[in-house]
Image (cartoon, rainbow, N blue to C red; front, side, top):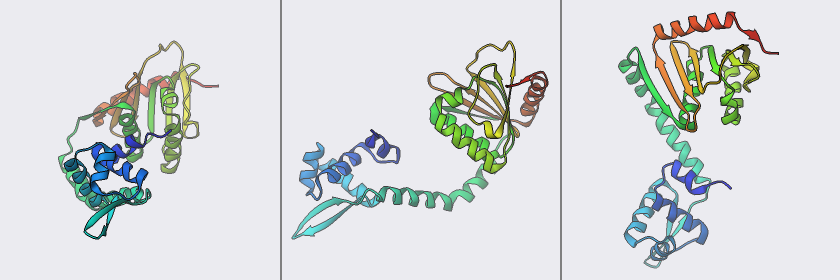
Length: 239
């Protein structure tokens, strides 16, 4: 079962907002005092959560006499809210990209943690749009993130990105449509996988909590690519 509370937290709702929103979804129209009681919040916290939810468009109210009766808007409002956030980001994106370009420095290193962080590394490969050269893979990407591995393959195909990938014999990745796989005999098992694309080198470390490192340095990428080319020349095709 999907963790509703976790998903609502991920889109930016506070714990108190989540309690109030779910209370209204479960019980329908309520006065503020009853909401506080059902959500197990003090009145001040409940009122503050209601105010924030109204600003997001997740809660509305109707006046019955002089009393406000609050109700949650339909769940599809969540999708509308996310769309509005996306539109807001799109309006500032050009300026942010220009600032990013001005502040960009050669040799910068970025660190990423967890599955979501590693996903950001793969999406950076798509944004860069350059062919990817990989060595050290044990097939961890496909084992740990199988659904995203297929999405990544599709995105590469759409962007015309190809991958040359050196694995340990007997291992494989799922992005076979856009990749050529080869192996080198005698390679020992390793959690570290090196990706070279454009002027960047990404090292993915597939431990219990995976980590990623992106090094943006043309000289480093060129040196790693030379090392890759030597290994590719001496590798064998996977059967």
